Structures are given as C-alpha cells and as structure tokens.
Length: 120
Image (cartoon, rainbow, N blue to C red; front, side, top):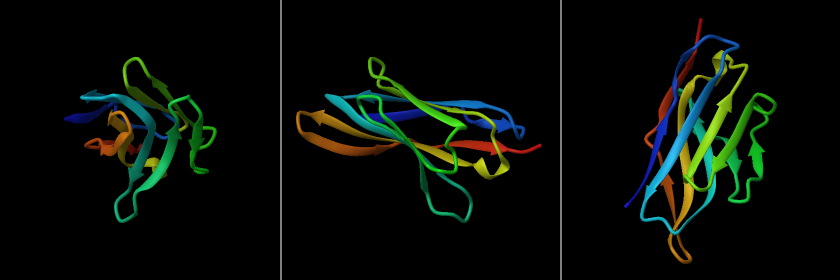
C-alpha cells in the first residue's frame, strides 16, 4: 500500500511564506512525476506545480516567480516553497504522484490535503 503524507500548511499573513512537504511511503519501485494541486472553496482543483523524476519543474502562471517545487528522490519527498503569499492562494493543497509499484505498473496517488490560509 502506498501513502502520500503532507505537512506544512497553516495560517500566514499576506506576503509571508510557507513550505509544504509530501512524503511517499509503502511498496514503491519508482516515483515518477510529483505535483501539487490546490482547491479553493467553490472552485475546481488546479495544478500548481509539477516536477519530473529528473527534477524539471513546471508552474501555473499564477504562482510563477513565487513558488518553487523541489524533490528529494532518496526520500521520495516533494516540497513546495511558497513565498509572497496572497489571499487568493488560500486553498487546500494536495500532493499527487505517479508511482510505479512494480516495474511498468504505475498508479496515481493523492495525499489527504493540507489547508493553507493567507489572511491578515
């Protein structure tokens, strides 16, 4: 069984910073792309940032220049460094990963979500 466990959410003032972490554990052969999504109340879930197994990042336009995604392949962990936070960044943030549980058998996994609230 594979699990994604997130941490690092919370309440922060506008302009502040937070760092989210997501660790994959369980029966894992290889972790491929890892992503962060977010969902605000009344809105659809949207991709925030993605990083390939080789470390190539991709960002939503709304967070470019403010958020940085990184990963530690030895720990099967992905991070999201969020700076210059705005009230519109308020959402539940979800970790997602494409994980090979055995060679060439890949499944999609989601974390439980962590709340990020940006408010004064």
